[in-house]
Length: 416
Ligand code: AMP
Image (cartoon, rainbow, N blue to C red; front, side):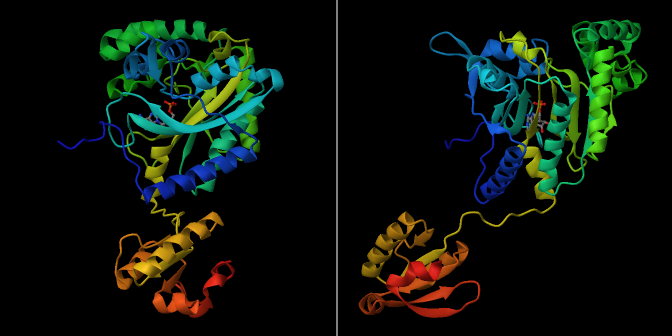
């Protein structure tokens, strides 16, 4: 029996990888421009790190994590998201000591055992960033502006930004009570999931995907009307910044993210070009997380974006980047002796930094010319006994069709 990849995972094959390289290079370039530096954390961590940060009662921790016991009987989990690991690394490596505001980004795979469907995988990829150390709303605004800048530079124009404030430890408990009281009145009519959430996590009831739940809770109080003075001021300031950046947004007081660590700002970017899984990116502020994970109380804000979702939109738009890997030169050879020369020459030229390909299948010259075409080589050099003897050969420009006889020891000069 042939092996198959695991359900919910996907091979990313050439030429699709060229699109990934392109997207990753744009993402990196924007991050660098905003002065975010790359951080690479391990793909697995202690299970407790995620349980403690994301929250025991969330879907991610409750039913989606890839958790296993290793040979030392330690409970290990493949990271379902990036923030917890980054904060763990921030604390462990005292990153805040050298710098009051630490700005880092990551790009890599995440793992969640969700039901696979279009735009929902079990191994998927995210890019994301964290700014750790500032309470100021300008950092929230910068994170949102940076997220949007990335989509702009990838020519994605159709997205919607929703923002909210989910309050803090001062105002949220009070709001939860108000909401719980209202929800208890209609509990019997709600879906079983929502009934359970009334006591566990009432704000998530407002986020229910059940249509009946949505209708029943449409007029429920929202947290943005019940913020404490500090959270309200922070939220007003964020909105002012976004307006001054010319970034359109809507306030959605029902926006609840699937992770418990958020305080104050929460935001989500959706694309109408995606199906039911329409979230491109999400993020927010997490002022209590560092302390919760055993570090010194340090505020932070960040976001994460799904790369596969972004690829789906780019594909829909018919976006095809130029092949990022193509030989500058293909050396076609007529016989065994010239093939040996061409292989040795490719090794030389490659060591000098030139991308070169030759024939490794002992094919006919015609087949080699076809291959050079398929590889989108810029030039082809044809060598045989005569060329090796005279030290001169034809160099063909594949784009213009122009052919020139050149001395073999001038290949480098001709290519540059
Ligand atoms: P989250 O960490 O849940 O806030 O997700 C951030 C972004 O990651 C989402 O907006 C999606 O674009 C993407 N994402 C989350 N879960 C998945 C998944 N299972 N498959 C593909 N993309 C995902």
